[in-house]
Image 1 (cartoon, protein in one colour):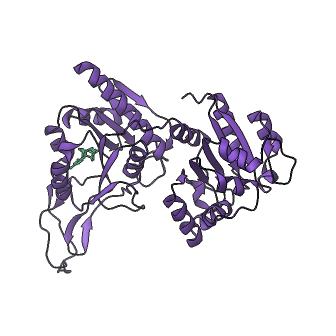
Image 2 (cartoon, protein in one colour):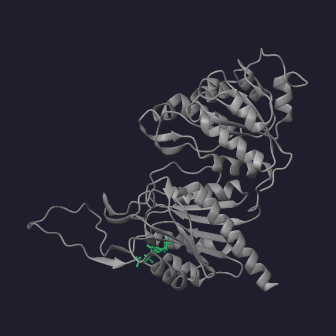
Image 3 (tube, helix red, strand yellow):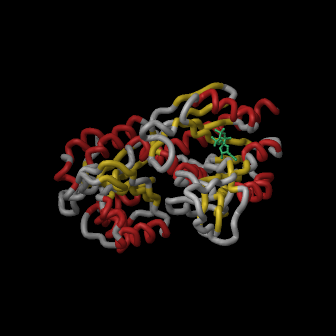
Length: 406
Ligand code: CTP
C-alpha cells in the first residue's frame, strides 16, 4: 500500500488504548502519509503529545485555546486538510458528542466541520459499549456514513472480558488505506456467502444443530461489501447481529440451503461457503412434539443430507470462484485438500477448531488457505482481517484464471 502524500487526521481520545495509536501514526508514516494528530485533554493524561509530535513530525493539537500552530483557524484548517479523519481510540464520550453534534473542544469541533470520510475505532468497557445510549449513537453515526472498525473482544484493561478492545493498529491502518485508495476492488462483482449453522428439525420445538455463530461468514460479507461487491448472505442459525448493506436470505435446514443455493448460485461471481452444514438430519420429522415413552432410551434415526458445496461445484459456471471451509479436529491439511478436490473448489479455508483462538464463536481464527498452488498458513488474526485476506486471495486466483483463459 502506498499512501505517499495522503493527509490523515487522527483524533486520539482518552482511553487506555491511546498508547496503541502511536503505532497507527508510525505505520501511516511508513506508508508515506502525512499525519496530523488532535488529542483531547483526557488523551494527554494517557500519552504525552510529544510522542505523537515525534512520530508524526507534525505539531499536535491539544485544545482550541493554545496558540495556533497552523496557518489558519485550526479546526477549519485540519477539517479541510483531512482526506480521511480517524478517531482511535474513540471513547463512548466522543461517539456521543459526534452523534449529538457537540463541539466543545478541538477534536469534536474539527470532526463537526470536516467533510472527509470518518473512521472510528471504538474502545471502551463492555458495559459502556452495550449501553442503550451507545447503541443508539452508533446507529446514528452509521446511518450518517461514519465507518466503524471493531471493537474486538477479549480481556479489557478494567479486568472485564468482552467486546470493547480497540482493533489492532495494523487493521485500522489497512482500513484507512482502503478508504484512501477507494479500496473497491470488488465493485461490479456478485458475491454470495453462506454463514451460520443449519437446524435439522426433530419435531416442532426441537432440532439438531452445531456451534457455528455466523461470525466468519458475516465478516466475509462485510468485507466484500466494503470492497464494493454486491453481496448476498444465505444464513442459518446465528448468534451475532446480521450484517447491513447486503441481501439477506434466511434458511433453516441443509435442504433449504440446497434449494436456495441452486437458485442463487448461477449468477454469482464468487461463492464462499462458510456455513456449518449438518451432514445428517432426523429421518422422520414429527409433526407433534415427541413425548416421553416407556423405557430409558430413545434412538434417533438419521439420514444423510445433500452435500451443498459439492452440488454447487457440479453446476459451477466458467469464471466463478468457489471457496469452502473445512473445520477439522484432526489431519487438517489432508482432509481439507480432499475436500478441495471432491467439492470442485478453488480454495479451502482450513482451520483446526481445537486450537484456542480458532473456530466457532470466537472473534479470531487460525487458518490456512489451501489452493491448487499450495498451502499458506496464516497467523492468528481477527475474523475480519482473515476475511480480507481470503478476498485478496480470491482476487489473485481470478486474475490467474483470467490470464490463463486470455
Ligand atoms: N458443506 C456443504 N454441505 C454439507 C456439508 C458441508 O455444503 N452437507 C460445505 C461447508 O459449507 C464447507 C465445506 O462443505 O464449506 C466443508 O464442510 P465440512 O463439514 O468441513 O466437510 P464435510 O464435507 O461435511 O466432510 P466431513 O464431515 O467428512 O468432515
